[in-house]
Structures are given as C-alpha cells and as structure tokens.
Image (cartoon, rainbow, N blue to C red; front, side, top):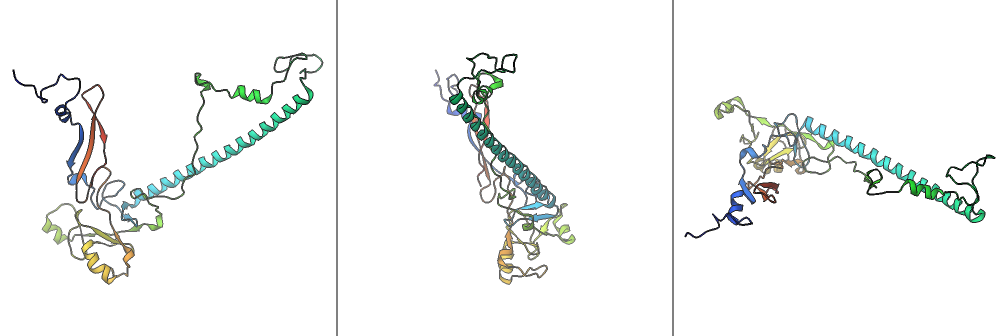
Amino acid sequence: MPQRHSKNNNDLAFFTYEEKRKLGYGTQRERLGKDSIKPFDACCLCLKSLIDPLCCQKGHVFCKECILECLLAQKKDIKRKLAAHAAQHKQEKEDEEEKLMLQKAREIDAFDQQNHGAVPQHNGRSRTLDKNGFHGANSVKVTSYEEEALRNMKAFWLPSATPEAPVKVEAPSTETICPEGKEKLKLKLLFPIYFTEESNEQRKKSSSLESSYICPSCKVTLTNTLSLVAISTCGHVFCKKCSDKFLAVDKVCMVCNKQCKERNLIVLEKGGTGFAGHDDHLEATDFKHLGSGSGLGLWKPAASKS
C-alpha cells in the first residue's frame, strides 16, 4: 500500500500546506512590467498624457484642467465643512441656552412647591379638569422637568425611541493639499513645465509613431529610467546629469538663458501609482487568505514594495 503524503491527503478537517499553496494562500509577489508603471509624462490624477502640464514644488506633475478641478473641489468641500461646523456651533449654543432656561424653570417650580405646597389647578369657575387631568386639592402640577423626561425618554427596544449618538463635526483645515504628496498646495505655487520634443529627423531615425521628448542639452530621449529636473522659473525640463553638470554650476537655463538658483531646480517624481511599485525593486505584493468554511480565497490587498 503506497504511503500517503501531504500532496494527496485531501480528507483532513484542515488545509495542508500543499493545499494552501495550490489555492494561492499567503503573500503573492510579482515582478511589475512597463504597463504597470505610470509614464513620466502622464498626469498624476487622470493618468493620461499631459495637457498644459503644471508642476508643484515637490515635483508632482498634473494636467492644468485636472489640478484646477481638484483644487476647486477641495475649496467647495472646505466651504461645506465650515458651514456644517458653524451650524453645529450655533446649535450647541442654542442647546446651552435652552438648558439654562430649563434650569431656571426647575428652580422656580421647586421654589413654588416649597413655599405654596400642592395647589389645585382649575380653569375658571367651571372647575373643569386641568391640562394634566387632575382636580381637587390633592392634584400636583407636573413640573417641566418631568415633562422633559417623558418627552426625551429613550428606549433601545423601540425603533422610534432609539437614542442616537451625536456626530460632532471638527473644525476643518482651510488649506488645500496636493492630491499626490499630501502637502499644502496653493495655485500660485504651481508652475508650467515644457518638454522638448524630438525633431522630424530624429523621429524618422527612431521610426516611432508616437512623439517623444528629449533633453535639450544632451539630446537623450527621456524615459522613466532617467531622473528629470525642471526649472521653476522658466519650466524647461532637463535630465539629472545635465542639471548637475551645467545648471547647478552655471545657474543659467541652457534654452532661454534665464537666471535660476539651486532652489529653483525641482526634481520630477518618477512614475508609480497606488497600484505599482517603482525605482530599483519593481515588485508588488498581495496577500490572499482563505474564506471560512470554503476553499475559495478572498483577496486582501497589501502594500506594494518599491
């Protein structure tokens, strides 16, 4: 009789290591290809080719329309949150005033009952019942405190009387933030950038249908493998080697001869979205755990490693 191994032992009440491995249990790693990485000339918001590109001080590049819509949406959201916060503050103030009025009413009622005792409640000469349904010398007026307690009584077993937890709106920040770097961003801090396109002769040599960009200094085709530097004063884009060799030394743009300082040299962020790793280790990971009571797995995304 052949010996039973873990690979063909499938009648146990639990999953063996081999069965988990076949189902893809655990952390799955995969080398990312070119299609998984955002190109350097793609917008960080719409992930499409840049149209009228604008760059922030941290090197994140956006389409002009995309970043303007994003900042406008943030301002509208801030305005809505400020209105909600102001309404909540006003409501809290009104509730505090109402509590003070109820406290004064309780004190007056307690003073009346202590000094005058039980007073019969009659409406005129007809000696009809009062609003609480009592008459005679033994009737006692229901205090406003008791009325409030009856009115505000909460019963968790009744849907109509279930208590609700108040939602407190915190005071929002009035600063707009960069959607990519999460730092403070203002419209005046954005500056346009300009890529240098290949000439017709270079395009014929490369036999490429799509237009590509080159460094205006060394004429090297710009790709994701190169680090790019933009000048915030004029917006021209160079490769990192030319920037360190010429711009950082001469402090002059080699295209328009405009003066620039070292703080004006902005390193553009490389490609990479929330679904992709980049830089040296192009590897993404996902964790897959088994669903309870079934052999099917449920995907649980894990952080991408870069």
